[in-house]
Image 1: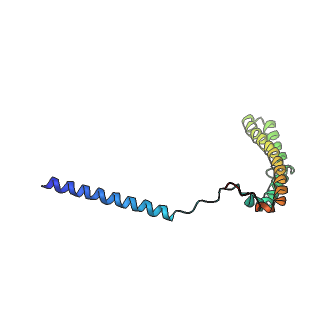
Image 2: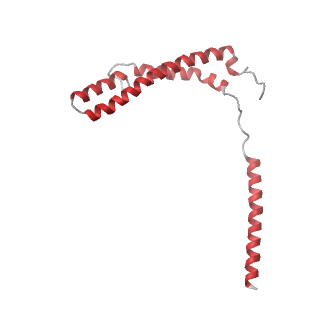
Image 3: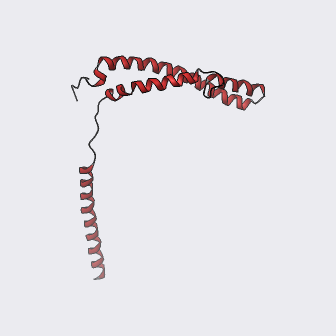
Length: 137
């Protein structure tokens, strides 16, 4: 008799758990936020163009600054030269790798500036991304 009671309790517990799990997932589905727009984000990008342009200019100015400016290519080059003079080859190698990366960053930022200029022109011609063609969505 005790085994029957345990079986009934177990089955009742499983049934209650199944019912609760089903209603919880349905409630979660109802309260889930609606999916966002699936566009290309043209309007948002057009709004950010001036800020992005200033950020790129600021970074290029810092990279091209003299040896007295932190983050400049000239300052890092001076550190590499000093490490080589002192015979610290491991430090010089590490700093040279950073210098190579920083030099390639300058090239990347210059390319981004060109690309951003094209985006700015597009935004001006297309009402800041508001008047994009919405067919097919």
